[in-house]
Picture 1 (spheres, rainbow, N blue to C red):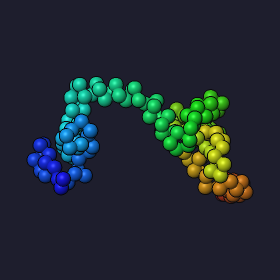
Picture 2 (tube, rainbow, N blue to C red):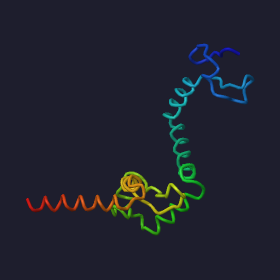
Picture 3 (cartoon, rainbow, N blue to C red):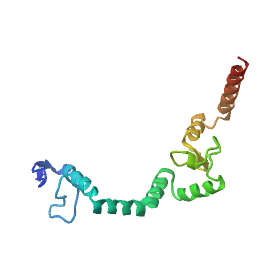
Picture 4 (cartoon, one colour):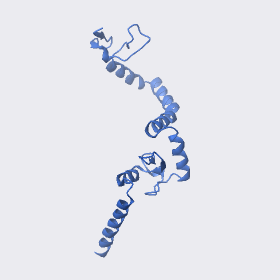
Length: 156
């Protein structure tokens, strides 16, 4: 089969323009991807569509976060995140900001060499720690640098 006609846009398009659908005779969706997206977008704006979308979001919010954490950090990552959150009272040990003061969730900080979880950090502190590449001397040098800068500012 070279192509398929979409009944919505009335165009003959290549097979890759259609999603798979086992329930149809040819194994392809009735509408092309573009038209299906537009149809779904219109439906989501209807009262029934808004209601269903909200129900879906509520139902799958926890599952989505769990899957994302496991994909990023490995199995049981969400359990570790929750344990660290309780231990740290939801506070980043670097900047001392609480989760409620941040726009994004705290990051699960881990050692890239052995995969061991160290705790939760805000995004900025996590980047700082990651940039130091486990070299504590870099962080100490930066502290000294900043202290000397602010001391010279005070004497002016």
